[in-house]
Image (cartoon, rainbow, N blue to C red; front, side, top):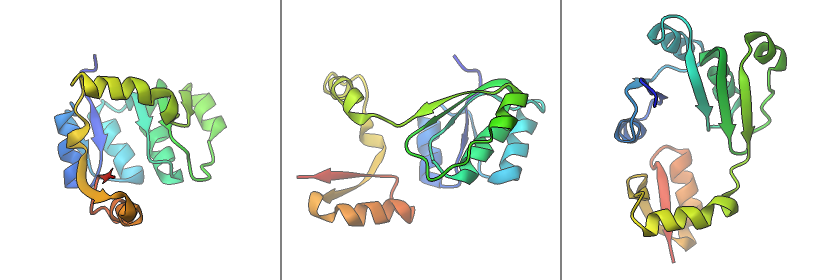
Length: 153
């Protein structure tokens, strides 16, 4: 396993979740400052492996910058018109792999893990709303008033 897990977040609730799930360090800075902090924490090299799950140009470039030469960077979800810097990845020897998060493919296995109590997703949800208020739930997440919203029927 990893000796060190660095989470990048400015939001206290997300930081608590990251610590709960194994993060050893938190970086609150963004952009070049965040990259510099990760490099400082890793002896100037950057992280061996980085996961980018936000999907913006800024977060993608921050992930590329935080990955050491020869390292691995994964990205998941649907990006928002992110321009991938192929030449930068090539010359740094950064291995990238990514794609959409195909929920339908993983949902049966995830439901079984929850049913068997192997995983507890409850800590991620901090707002519960009826299905009719789904739009309010998305707004709450967008405004960082909620980490994840659980919709009930």
